[in-house]
Length: 233
Length: 233
DNA sequence: CGGAAACAAAAAGTCAGACTTATTCGTCAC
DNA sequence: GTGACGAATAAGTCTGACTTTTTGTTTCCG
Image 1 (spheres, rainbow over the protein chains, first blue to last red):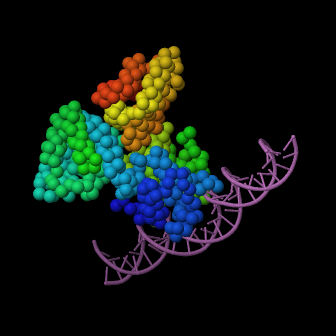
Image 2 (image 1 turned 60 degrees about the vertical axis):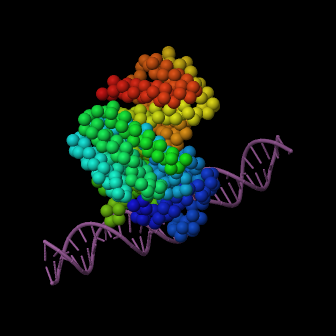
Image 3 (image 1 turned 135 degrees about the vertical axis):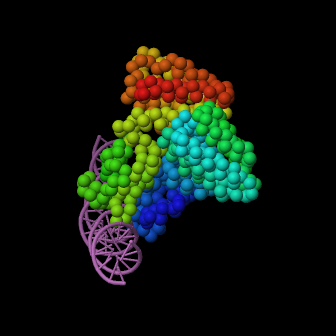
């Protein structure tokens, strides 16, 4: 899924990308294309293509007579889905999860408010379906099914907002929710309050109550933030 | 500024990127690398590197025996600064500006709230300095100076939030504000109410009043949205 | 001794050509 | 109609030679 084995340069990136985002190369340190090509046992052209991609993500900068310089974290395109995945797979995953959850807490309530005014009848139906699915899987260690509906729910909200910038955060939210379920401790059933809130959001959107949808979604996200505070202090 | 003639492949991208994001190639249409290389009068290796970058932006997908397929808009990495710049330079700039302004309206208030609790003394000083600069340039057609301080103000807020995802939106906000001043009609002096709000935000942050900073910033962003509604209906 | 200009080296950048591989499409047999 | 085989096609890969830019050094005057 995350791995794009569709080419040699992709395989190189699967190793080099995580290494850089994990901080294995200090910012400012210099790599040479030829050397990298030898290390990875690929031709220079393949390595050059990989470097170009890293460059477009602003993970590195390539300069003549100098080499490929690793850029500091503040330069990275942290919204690039690939970069997000690499960083989430790395060591400072907790910090990553927090950043992204804060972003969620800013974006999702506004998205829900917009969704309440713009959602189509079909989207409203999907929303309630997802919420009911969450209810159905909220008891008895059925976390996989719960997660599936949770992800779908937030994706519909973001899409129904009608704002493409919001819509494209669907993958990010999916990654965050999946990460929370998989990696972090989540032995018990999901918080019943959260489940109820999702149902209420679906109702508010259907009722075209933007303010309420926004308020309820804000409750969901602050709950997610609080949960993160408890689990990873 | 936006164009970095940092190589032949960069020059190719400066033409091909805007063309694709402008919709000159219908989604699903297929390009051939060799043909493109001939059209642009570059070698295949250079064109391949350009295609790789476009691929990492999810503007195109390259498949064997098929060619380079242009992807539909919903697949694009719309958070890639390069893509944002290309789209803002294109025909549907107004729609773009709206999407980004809505994003601002979601993010900036939350960022301001965080900044109120985390801003350093130095950042507080910068903030008031920027706000005062805005006041100083708010009369007498001194839009350039006003814009400069406005951009700096929002950049400090986003940085001071301590959230890297927010911080990286500084460039986007700069682009939006610059676009508004340059392109759209803005003959008169800036809205006095907005100027006052900026000063008040700076005060709220200094006073560590998160709720007030968030509320005031929300007023700024809804003002920006309203302004956009008036100018581009 | 210091600074400017010439020089040399290093690494990315570019190009051309040959070869490989996966995918698709057409054909033919069953 | 379906399945298998085969040819065509375009991306993918590799190699080697060459160019260009930048940097660091050296040399040569003032």
